[in-house]
Length: 258
Length: 258
Image (cartoon, rainbow over all chains, first blue to last red; front, side, top):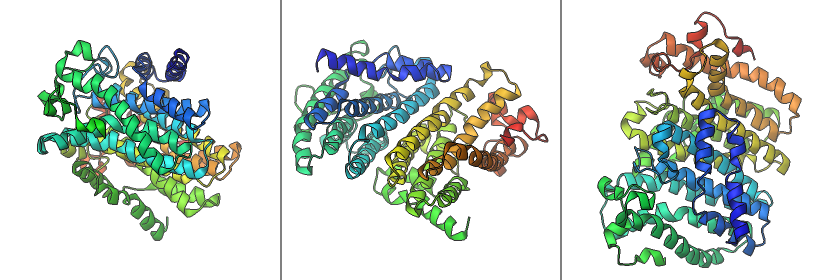
């Protein structure tokens, strides 16, 4: 990502601040806090790259990119809730939920999701109707998995076999779903045939899994909270699936090569 | 609503059951439970009426109608969370959150919202792009208010003046937002001019406010939980805005006539 791209993406990520400053004060403050911390922005970066490869306009690519990043940010806020992973300081620092409460975190996440859907629609606007429909169906299916279904498996992991296959599937489901969307949505809008998705997806999934896993899941086991931004070893204490706990830190997961 | 309309709407409301039966078992069971209880379905009824008045197809009208009903159902699930209204048995009975937990209720609501957005997009598909854009912007603005902003005012009511104007605004915001969408969205897709919205909105808002308020807010004060489906007098004990507590039960609210 060029320096200019990074600046553009960060600026667009923070663009919701103007709307946040006009809304209910507690929601506005919570949104502003989240928007202050854009994170790695690897998802918008991938969207821009794929969109350029398919000749989409920068405007539509940026709408799509920021929309998916808001989806991601919202999913982190939900993950951190006491009733979910009960972690802290992943989505925003200092510990967002301690400051704004469960309700504040939920309402902030819902506002982000609402904006994300609007940006997704805006990003698809220039595509032909057939591609818009395919993109909408794809978003709906994969995002529902990431947002609702994989977290359920996560929460009920205690009732599932703690083997490598199960653990990998759940970890992949939660970690890779949004990375898949960053690849597939701009490709659909650019008119990519189904076979091309698979090739492109394999490469980019590798990239995404490598980056997000190495930054979050593996560090969860081997480092402490201050360094990782996620409450250390939370998965172990809650009996939640953590791929590194199952396969050991030194061994690469075959899931990384899918 | 004719008997046939009611059957069609109920059948479409439950149509997510097929998908729910294939997803993660806990999510599937929670979704099935919610889908078993369609409620009054006044929102889909209004959407169908307005859509027919503007000549929209039954298919698109039904997608839009069920999408808005899923938004409504999801908003009730969020409202009932312990960190929000801490009520019970509004969205589903017997007390949904006691059975599925906070996380189960949140994930079920998110799955419904995801489906609602997809249905909204499907419902708009046949409209010209300009109307689609206006409908999307309208949905985004009003729904964000209902889902995130008005609940924040609700939660922080203790810090606001407990006068009639403030209380009415918050109650109206939470209660009427989705009713407004049931009127405005099909009208936009049908090409209604802005002036026509206002007239139509005034009439239908009166209808919506009358029905939903009389069924929920007023009964919250004067009846017990078993009869209302909402934990009785919850608003009073939590210091949340309740229009009936401010104006008294016998006096009609001027907000009803807006």
